[in-house]
Image (tube, rainbow, N blue to C red; front, side):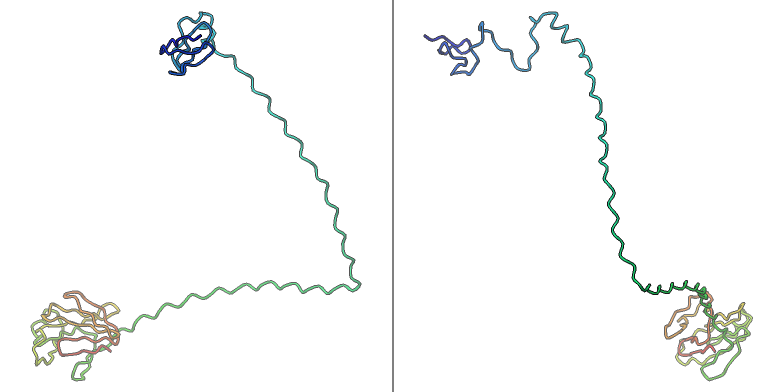
Length: 221
């Protein structure tokens, strides 16, 4: 004898709990339909059950913390037997002598200041003192008056030198060279390296410098 599934109408055996066609549970007592998982609670639940569901649960007391177990006492190890003292005591090593305090290192002496040039040697070998203002050029007479100096005319066959090309003047503890604005400029050679003097900017000279004015060379001594 068979019966029908109440969900899909397929014939099932009376002792079957699940429908072989739709898989629904059909063997519950009273032919009750199982609730949908996660659905809302049935309205047929009793008020007492709803009241119990809304009542907050009583707090559950936490267990008391466990008392720490006493640490296991370890018996002290027996001292190791000391070696028998030798019959003849070994001579004690000499105590190291205290290191003598190091004397403070003297500070390096500052480099000596370069000597102030005293003279300039011209291309013809003439030497002039640098305790006065000297104005060099192809025709420096007019410019010397403006600089309140002594005009020094230099030979310039190639005409590479300006009329007022260079001014040498003593300063406070130095001798300075100034190119007042020559057409071809002035080179300062120091330790084999040449530098171009900036027009209108004084530059301090040291002994051994060379000044190149076109083809003429001045030696600072």
